[in-house]
Image (tube, rainbow, N blue to C red; front, top):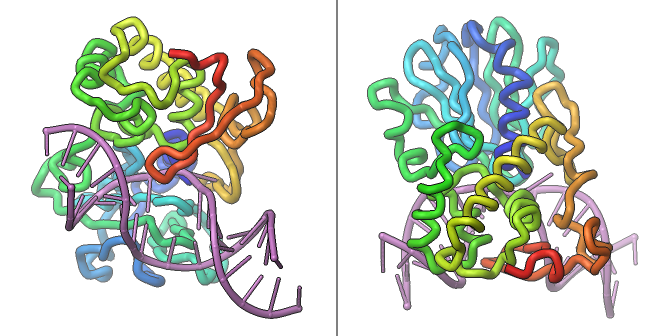
Length: 271
DNA sequence: AAAAGCCCCTGGATGC
DNA sequence: TGCATCCAGGGGCTTT
């Protein structure tokens, strides 16, 4: 479910409230993708300094070490001062003196992993290979184009891979390619500098807009307050197979790329 | 090195 | 109503 916008919206919805909180306990539900990597009791007494985001990971900085959180496909976080009892899909609770941070994740592709403070966060195994942050100043169109030139895979799959640019998942890859007028199947290396620039801008535009709209709620995404997103209402192509293109009126098509659905408009995406 | 497939898991929609 | 099948926002790992 969660791509960069949903993860960032989640972060914004609880970062201020958890900053400065003292950890009082940890409750684990069923196993997530990876083991926590430390004894839950060892977190008690530590302070949450703040929350950052790297790609689709949330980084909870502690006074000693940090927690990496990933929402996987079906995860969402809630932060509640007066929480109810844990449900069958609530697999991680961080009890603090400010409130309870709870991970709800039916499919359990998500994860909470402890990392020691020793290494810089960027050196962590899970983060080391990640590409540029698309909404940061460091996302450079020239470097983006240079990276694309090295890849022969279809541009849609290069966007999803996350080693050139992070945070673009299945919804926003289709949306960005539509905005840029680029066919999802074109080999990445075929994109000219001008078209790479256009895609670079489209990625930034669609992600920034989605953050503004609170993310996309297709089934069950909500931020840490339980509020849903609204970007799905203005999607140009994602999930719109057979419906008319909002630009040219032609029928939106869908196809499979790497066992994921891709949505596009034949007429508007000729490149 | 890069690309393509394979899984992890649950639930909802659809079809017979 | 019951059961099988397919599909879903991710991504690390293994195999080509």
